[in-house]
Length: 562
Figure 1 (cartoon, one colour):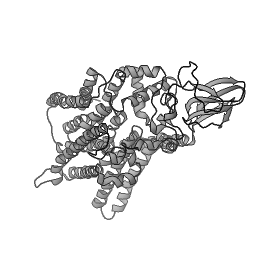
Figure 2 (figure 1 turned 30 degrees about the vertical axis):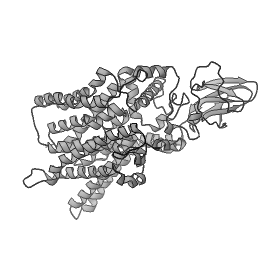
Figure 3 (figure 1 turned 135 degrees about the vertical axis):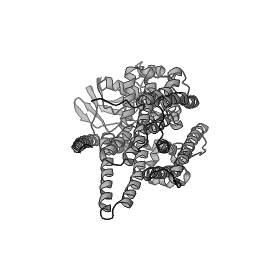
Figure 4 (figure 1 turned 90 degrees about the vertical axis):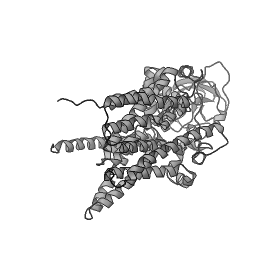
């Protein structure tokens, strides 16, 4: 069967993403706010992948080799992708990751725009604006918030799932799962956005439905939406359930300390930290600009003057996007403080301006609706895009780019990682009874002490994390201190027998009493009940998703062709 021409988007979106990362290719990576955190996560994951552990929970090098349960709490897609790119070539991994995230975001916006029944070229313009919008470049260059950057690709897919004519559970479930498995704050934003648009969709269904079947149709639609949300959460349960349950075992409240709290990050707020205020001011300007641009674009679609060719369906899309934009605008101001503290999980967004990611999707969706019938020659559109995009992208990239010192670039961080000297702990992932101030920075893998509270004596051992299997011999009862943070998932066996005996230490390291003589010590990370339940729910959800997909395929093929 002869295929039609390949859509222009398949050429132009990757090219636009390439233009967006060209400054990185020419001048090197941007060492933004979260650069080191993500790079260490990628290197940790890559090392464990090479060792055969494809589903890690514990990161060994943070906390100066005492480790932390980073991979329990940080969603897996971003660090898995980063690790895979690093295994190919570390020097280009951040650049390749950024290109993939931007290209994926462009394609996702193109899909959303086409769902809104606009022309191919209108959808393409919206996709190019989305991947090159200021907040995207701010996230990619100044913040290097790589997980949040990749999550921007799933937000348009979620909006498309709830705005399309025929809502199906699977179309909702997939972006919900992808958001939770990529970035938890983005997932919270996405689910609340879904709830708002779902409520508007149900209200529209009730108003438009025939009186005799209105209730039945509205309930059926609500069930499809709820099923999609539940299925999406189920697909991501292997991450969500352990992360939700095990946060009682770490100092998760450290994620919302002063400066990281919602009330410290409303638009144009001022604190005692000039660097914090500088970032907040930039984010605030971007948020206000995108919100204002969105409503300027939406205005002619909402007003619909006499003689306008705006269809009723287009106007409904615009109304839904406008209401969501208004609610987000309110949430960016101190007037919404009570909402942030009452609504579940909202405080963990830390920065209200993160909602600009949703605003950017609203802006570009609205732009596609305004240009819904535009149709220009593909060649001219390509030429204009290649000329105009660099004029927009490169000044923004230069403004947001964070220069890398010699000790901060990829090669230097990789060299440090390979020395096994360890890295800083992450406060919110520190186990509950551990004090980072008491933790030694050059501790050996293990040492013996009489009472379990002694520090490691300088014997010339190289710093490192505790081995998983080793033996010690002592002429008297003693305590072995492991350079490994205590965490309920760790299972310690002495001579093949599991032991729960511990000596408490201020630094939170595992200290195990030993009898005189030889002790064979083995350490393993156990499958706790919450992980088993999460894996089981995901397996059931995956089977349900496959069944729905198969049945949906059969239904579509059984329909008569036109």
